[in-house]
Length: 126
Length: 126
Image (cartoon, rainbow over all chains, first blue to last red; front, side, top):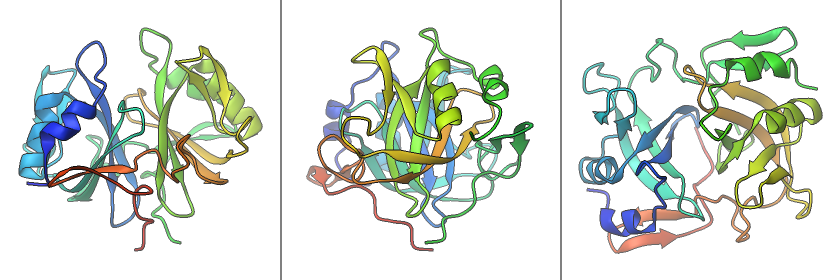
């Protein structure tokens, strides 16, 4: 239980489909693992269970990340942006996060010869 | 000029408004500065000029971050996710990124007593 989910939900400006984009970032490495979507129910579940939960737009159902794959995300912090239309989950990610097996879903980068594929962004090393 | 913008744009699944969500992350600290939106023109400008450029949904115009405020973002890397519906700009951010003056737009976090305000997520310290 991270805190008061209703105060978060009251501050969210959901889109016309009742959804808000959610960034999931691994707090150990800084790597952005994925961007998915949440409805109010998904935000409530995330805050209550401390497991990253989204709304699957393709399956039209609540989706606790890793419930089937095992590649779950323990949520440490849930943040909302200034205008209330984006959410950030800071997580401890178990295993790779992309369904392709890549660490991050952002495993393609713009290069001279088109998109270059890797395992995702490099870890942050300040 | 970061590379081939057209190969990126061909891979993007823009929404019904011709937009895609874009995460801007400071690569020095790992801090996610903001989430905004881009159309094809904004992506082209970002790749060509290496300056984070978005589409302002409120002003309905192309928006080079910092063009008026000075708080610009030099873009080091442009990435696209597995299903082509989210973009990541890895940037060197100059100054704070939020219009409120906060370093990050994600300056509110869920807490026991509601939303707690700070300057944004902590820098990554692996």
